[in-house]
Each structure stands twice: as structure tokens, then as C-alpha cells.
Image (cartoon, rainbow, N blue to C red; front, side, top):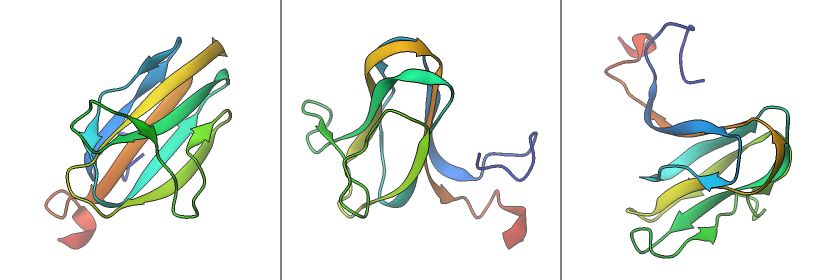
Length: 118
């Protein structure tokens, strides 16, 4: 999960992560370039990666690099690409039945924290 070991420093520059045990929405953050969207756990529910071009007033479902809508009902991982600076992303659980949904959006290696680059 962005670390070389379980106790190592986070290598991603931007991370939004957490869990859902009910419907809800994560924190949002801007992402630019290629980034990861991962969903895992044992759950019954519907989760979407969403994006906003207007500072969070309006949200739309994001698409991966192959054009697939990022609405998931099972664990999965995707690489997403954003070309426009300032676009916010969040994760929304719009339907929930049971279990724990874990999610993560992450991007970029921090060269100052990455031991492989020193």
C-alpha cells in the first residue's frame, strides 16, 4: 500500500483512504496524471470513484483509462489518468448491505522519501 514495508514511510504523495460500513463519501483531494484506485474487503455494496471540476459542487462518476465507469460492486484496482489540474476526486458508497469496504486513491512517488532513489 505505497510502503516498502509495513512500518516504512508512505511513498505516495497524495493518498485518500479509509473504510465504509454504511453509505457515505470520503474526503476529496486533487489528482493529476496517472493514479491508483483500489477497493478491497468482503462486502455487499456499490462504490464509485467520483470527480469534480468545480471545487466539489458537482460530482460525476470517473472513468478509467479504458473508458470504464468507476462504479464497483466487488474488490478491484484500476489505474486512472487525469490531464486537467485542480480536478478533485473522492470515493462514494451509494449502496450498502453488509461488510467492510476498504478504499484507497493514491498517486506519485515522493523522491525525497523513496529510499530507492537515494
